[in-house]
Image (tube, rainbow, N blue to C red; front, side, top):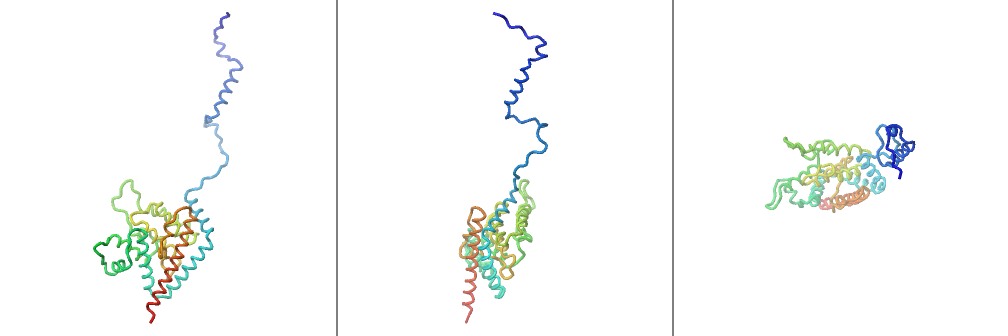
Length: 284
């Protein structure tokens, strides 16, 4: 048996020709390892750009509005007829509709304040033994905002009567910052119809961190003022009269806007019927 010759110094200095090929094959097999930084291309191939979340949200609402253009025009016509009638009628009509809308919204928000109790609270600050004064105050705020005052997009903090406490926690986000994000998104949607913008703002309310106890009431009143921004007689757009189904729907923006339009149309027709009843009751 012939013994193997020991490796000499020259063997390590001058490896066999096939050693480099074996090393090259070994490196080729490690295809899953990242390449060195210096070998990365300076100009990577173009790929799909990821849209920002805000842009995607606005695009979805633009598509929803385009898909419901005919229905939106019909609802806008209903609201325009209500606006014209309120302009020609006495100022008490607006206050009466605001009482009805605020009372209906209170049931949607969970406060459940009847119209007569709300009227007593607003006129004389009278409440029953079992009445929740905090709930009455919230619904009374809704009546004030539905009848007069600057809109929410002028000064949202003043519109909601909400201010941060003097000593805010280190981890707490100031209300002005949360409101600013929501207002910026609403400003970017300025090319949408006010009714569509109102629906979008309502459904993005909690996502912007604006919710607190009674946030549904605040969101609905804010949306009602935005929807009628172009009106002079109808300071707010009815949303809850005859039912608040349009405020409870979920799903994609197209479904939300469809239910929103149906609910607003039904509420506008209910408001017109209330005005008819008022005229009949006052006629000799």
